[in-house]
Length: 399
Image (cartoon, rainbow, N blue to C red; front, top):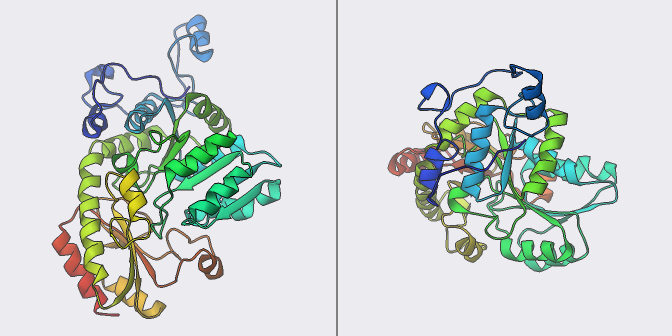
């Protein structure tokens, strides 16, 4: 089954949970770090013990597609960080998203979301769900009244992503979740950009919260994974779907994600500080047309962000003055940023929607979603801000 309750961790501080969550009791062989249990099946000394574990009458693992000791610690650590009742892990962030949606949605159901979601999520909304007979209503992300009105019409799921990828738009979680509760809908929040350091959707009333663990949770660009946390009865339904369909997180990836989680609080706080400083710097840059970062007082969602986030995150985006060729010249000139399709790493990452968040979409689809081809997504690493600033200033000289 998904993660069991942790015992003995008497703290609410994220930095301590990140270091010790799920690891309070002695680990196998006296290890100081969680061992990688690289085994597909698990053996038992007798049939009675095997049956007891298989039937859930005693603790134990049967097969790693279902549960695994290393993965279980990762799930427990995220559960504690999010303040959830339960958690279950997946092979990727998109596996977490798709498994959650397909667990609960049936033909004739309705799902309400916003126009600004990750490209893979948007593809599910636009291409996969409608042929299954599921009604999808995507509302202007920044129109809280329209979102609330759409929810009132009825929905099985209300799916929210805030801040959004890559335009950093905000959704008022308290208001949207309250509307979902009023009609008995399941509220799901993608918390990848904010992380449990900067935002706690469950404390704001969300039923489920999910992450692409590949991003900030892992933080080192060396492991893929996804995770869902929230109400136990809902998480266990998704767990059962996942164990049967097979999108399970492997033990080695779980180990790498656990290692990354140890420094989550340190990394995210540094990255958030750098992103805010960079956003303020670019706001006055003559080669930049617009900056999108909720920490800026000029951002349309700043008041919402300030009310539901403790930090504004390590990712910003900006639109370059000029055409797409100017964007390419800028990106090609950077020295302290990987041109790569991810975010949340200890190294700074830079990219465009056509190769990162919305690679699955056509230019026309991106335009309809309000994503200009001159947009640059910038995920701050843990490098010195001054070095990143100088590197980006140098690159912008090529625009």
